[in-house]
Image (cartoon, rainbow, N blue to C red):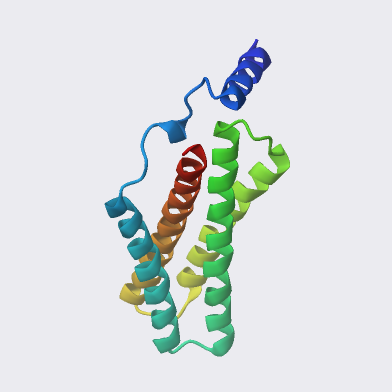
Length: 154
């Protein structure tokens, strides 16, 4: 029964007779701007904080790698979720790995900060800048995909 409903939904989407979540609303300029600001402020703050920290160069490399590891993984999760909603086939292994790597990047940051010789305020700064960057990346990716969908429909 479930497979039949999914197949019917996919056929309706392809025919253009079924509304998808992207049919709801075009993203506003304010949301697009806020998304880019969140992403930019988070990433730039994180990198400036890393540059100015008194960590060893190897530790700086660890934290720098984790931010981009996390950014790539959340964009993969967002794309996978969106593809599933739109009926675009994705493999469950890719979907699972995307979620696993997203969680792993957050855990690796937490472990690194837990063991770092920093003030608690510095640890909090890095954690918040990291999470703001991840949120901003997801929102920017969503907006890019929504805008592309709206341009193709017109």
